[in-house]
Image (tube, rainbow, N blue to C red; front, side):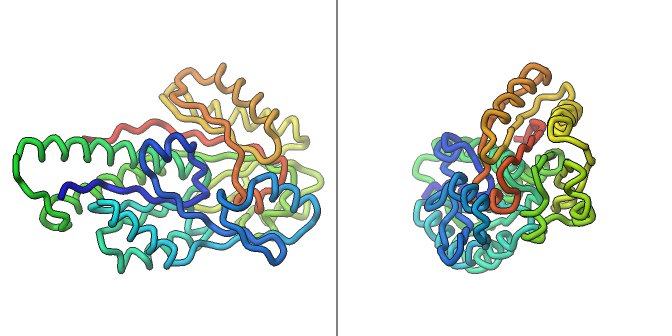
Length: 312
């Protein structure tokens, strides 16, 4: 039987639905608890719900999917005809999601490669898309080769049909893009990050949070301080400059993320469209409930993902 390579990620990738559908990407949701009620991100709770809960000072927490949830996703992919899976997830420094995926991979009915992107949001999403594009290309080449072998049987054994090598190539495509992708962001307050324990050495900024508007970035899989700016307007202007500097003249995909700040995000996206000469794709996306719970309303972030050609 001719099988395909399946892609699995988690709900913090915040991929455009069109891309999820086109590449048949399976998205496993993290959980968000508001008070005593638990919801699946992207399915049962919206960013607006979380923003309202945070403004009302309600307790909002998040948790990873269980290994069994991933095991069910892997079984479903196998039942749908997949010959192997590449499962790409948010930074293990921020969540136990990749660990849960790895535990499930050990008992999956087909081979699974788990990738810790060390990123989150569309920084993670860009890695998933790079992997999905290569997987589609490999599947198309495989289908063409099978067509030349009338009556031939393509086995799903990892060692016998090249699946292992294909999975390694697809995982490597995600890892290569992760190495060159950057995420920068501005938050109105560090309080939500402090409560969640996800700010690394940015903890040092909390004591002076009222005096500064910090710019943060993803470094080594963690959220770390980048610069301190005195006002929100200056911080957003500096965020724009940093994104332009990192984009340079190379082909890049750019995502502007926000939480409850759509007009500000759209305005920033338009300025970047005018200033970055080689934008391949430009997305404006509200972060989901999980990331929203840790950054709070007012978030503005820019992901700069250089386009990396995958060897065929």
